[in-house]
Image 1 (cartoon, rainbow over the protein chains, first blue to last red):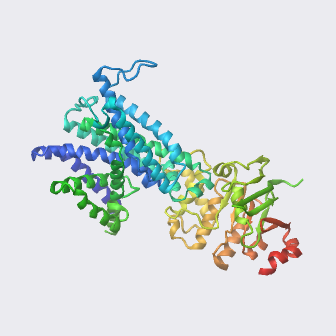
Image 2 (image 1 turned 90 degrees about the vertical axis):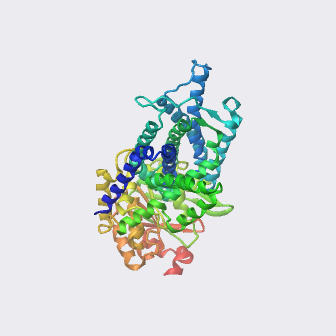
Image 3 (image 1 turned 180 degrees about the horizontal axis):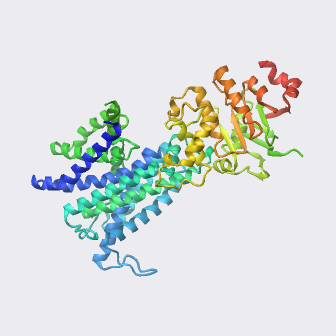
Length: 329
Length: 249
């Protein structure tokens, strides 16, 4: 069997398992599994979007959670106003918010794109450690901004009165919502894989390897990197909208460096620069978190060594390790 | 009237008070191979970086094809036809030889805000990349990762990438660096085949290559050009012998 066939069989098995999860967990009477796997799927989307810039663009952002937070708050605030009856804004026209997922997604993507363009224009003038610090700083600024927004719950966060409405789907039903998230994740994987293999993707990777050379070849690397940064932010915002819908609650913690760090760990654990690695990383990280936290609330003590082992023995993450096995088989 | 492709007028550059280039006046005639030689630290690489735009000049002007490009960004100069190679090999080790060349060609072929179709299946880029690879003696290495090539082949790829997109000016910064006599001879032949089709500024320490290739030579010493002329004129020049050639010949 060729290594390409084995790869597709592996992916197909993973997909089947994910499709079969709801009926199996219902049979086993462990329906919380559906809820926690929904969370995994959403984090996988956020990790994919981060992998685009970290794994392919060499831009290590320590503030990616900011865009997850923006997406989540967009959903919560729009839903807050429609339930509250108060208009979100009155100029130039009165707007009461919305409860339609498609509209929420559109707004969230727009907000994330705008913020990413503005912050990216500044952050991307720096590189390496400075880029890490400046992205962290922007995310923390948003974190404190939302803590100070008392109208939207401040530090306590903002509950959502039910999920957004999705056409043809009963979003309130956990199983339906799970399948919807799975569908969006598959869409994410397809779009991301196309993007990294495209002309744009090749330029992005060139910028990672040797930006100076790319410039002397004739590429305006700054603009290409900024575009990638904005695309990644839009992806994270979509994940944020779904995350808010899943928990029906948002809080400023979504902007914090904890979440940014967790997303980075997922990408590195799964294997940077492969897209599939980000998905695997999200699954493994959150499953380990769940397993270890059953034993102790200091589950990080157990997770830490696992991460260290992976980084030492599988430099290209879990997916890289699987690829090596596959090629040697 | 000679056909001047690029000229510099009193181009200067200093690093923290240290003078790297002082009143550089260089004229490159269209189609010539113009060697820029000089002892280590004379400012040759600085001059190349100033022409390519990586280093901003302190004063003076650069006129290329009749346009003042002194303040033009690196990528814009490259697209206008100024292409350079590096003394330290700067190929993309993680990509195949063909992908390296295809990427270089892509830079000059429309924009790359194309997000969906696979770049690897772009027939135009692949055909052009194939031609360039074969032209530079890399026909056996199409699908090898550039990082696995022998040093001499890497230097060939480095120069081949500068030819993508049909530039009008090649700035070759020590293309022979570290490749030994055999590789050097091969690369000299490959560069000789470009004669007349491109204007080349060749920075090189390998004097055999310089004398074999150059139509004209400029000698740079301590940031100033002390002589410009044909190979014979430079060989006979007293000042040059004193300052430079005496040491190596």
